[in-house]
Length: 149
Image (cartoon, rainbow, N blue to C red; front, side, top):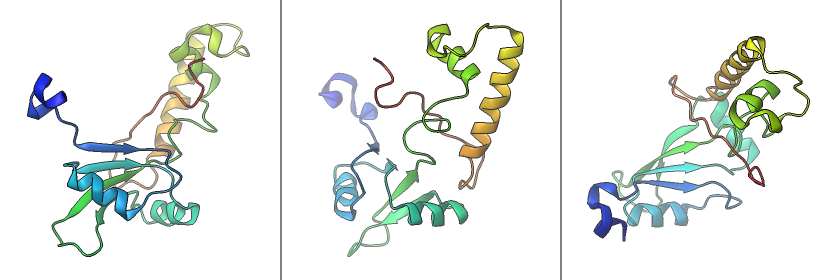
């Protein structure tokens, strides 16, 4: 449908597999065979994620077993699950900027000081998200399970 409606240049090339409770080589190989060239994944063993973070290797080429060296998929592992911020919540002032005043009951007034604090907190969280990357591009995801009730 996508191909016939929008043309071949609109076909997705990135697989988005955030919450399958683990990644399997078989699934990644199937994504590749379906034409995906890149992948964004999340749930991997904590020890593996820690190792990749320390080695600044949260992005890598997934080489498929029993395949030629050219059969590989660029893979990005999310820093902290599929949400942005600590424990799935942004700092109160950032929440307020993004979601509006109802999102953060504990922020009593919205003033320029809140914007400055929010910008500083957002910068700090983006710097934290960049740990484990070999570059300064950060994927920022907003929202989380049950965020839009």
